[in-house]
Image 1 (cartoon, rainbow, N blue to C red):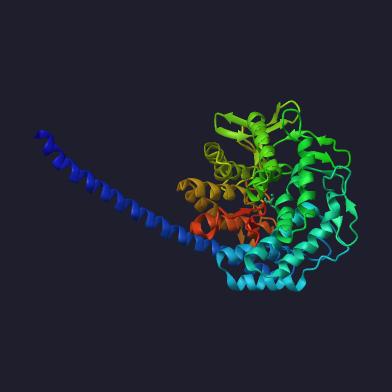
Image 2: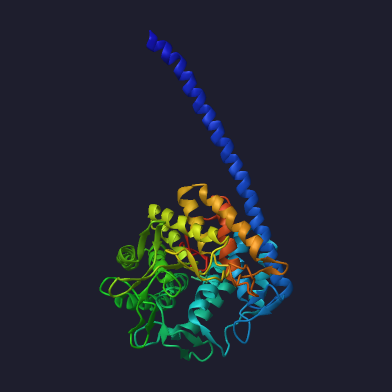
Length: 459
Ligand code: DMJ
């Protein structure tokens, strides 16, 4: 009897509290949704400000100089790098008019028949990647034709004795330049060249880019690490420090992503052995949590506790490989690195928590990792991080004529540069963090290292 009375009172109470919780959850979900859509709109507004400034002060140039209000080209003629890098962000943001402007600039002025030596890596990730994603999103075969023309002109870079690419090539003559390269410049070509093979049926692009990766991987040390610099003619390492920062970073990123995009098991086995060595020798569990430092590729001995804005891509890669706990732990520190100076420096010493190199170049990686982690965990902490990133950018980098890099995150002095990746990556990832999850079809696409989405359905 007493049990019955008990249940009589308890059950309605439980039901009531369940329904109250649901109401609260629904309400807070709705509030979050309303807030995130406002934030997504705000990012679009900032994007329009940056793009509008480019169109006003630097139309037709590679990049905007946001303090002087002028344009800047990488080489003797423009490759309209900003419009090409920004085009797919406009499509994802639904900015139809801006996308029309960018498309006209690209198709009216881009041709690669130029007597200019270009850097293979940057041209591949920004332009070849940009053209492939533009073709897949927009459907205009003019983008694909440009991509094929560009890739054919870049192909001579692979004609080294080892098959690892030279630093650069003359787009008209095919003359190559620069025998000292690094893992990032050697191993970050697969998504772009491989996709072109899938889209054209011509195997040459996939085969050459894959051989370059395999040759590099074959030269990793006995303990499974790579160095920072390699001679592509002799195959000898000229610098033996291993880390996750610039010159190595996207080599690791592409081992995993090439597996995910092409289902080619060779890439997964290279990634699997590499991540074991990374976690054994680079990972550093300190009092302040998880970091990844620098080690000698042959001995595994730690050589420094440096980490920076570029290394901050790694939580995204860990999350993509379903290593969520490590990704969460590392992202916590990436965010600390951002918060401590109200915006992240290029490099810090994570043991002393001191700045090593104070610039902020409008880089995306910290934001990119928060975006991946929000997708995989749905933890609102990443939306909170997103708000901080957005506030820091508008507070410290926004100018009347665009967005400017910082020469120092300590003094907040601005520099006259707005890299095209600010529109390709930084604002794209920030927007996608707040945008509805359906904006991206995670099953069907992979972002290249410049945040150009590549669809694996090959249409
Ligand atoms: C971009 O060009 C790419 O993300 C590259 O992998 C690293 N550097 C910049 C952004 O920081």
